[in-house]
Image (cartoon, rainbow, N blue to C red; front, side, top):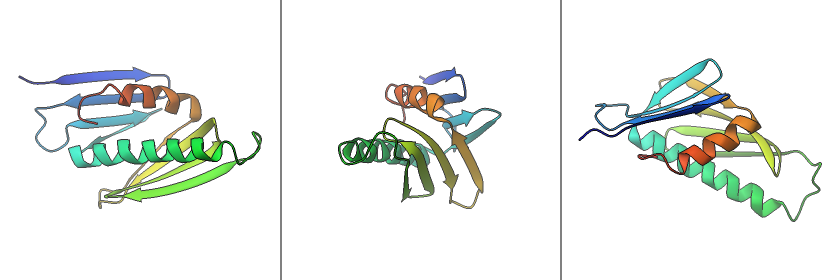
Length: 122
């Protein structure tokens, strides 16, 4: 049985279709969207969790008004978070040769992270 899941909010969208042959995942933002392979989706979710943990770990070592930048790269995806320990924007680039770049502002990213936590496949 197919598992189809879709959620969206202000500045973000997320989807999953277990029957899609090559690109079962979809991520999007304001005016853009891209389909991802299952591996890319899993990498995106893992790297995003690592960035969140990094910012949480830094919280006790920096002042609240300090801006931070953190870059991570995984299999086929590069992420850059920039902002404050409690609120940061995220930019990502697919490095698999498909040549795609996406961006979520901080408010959209918080909602997207919550949706990723319950989305099948990510």
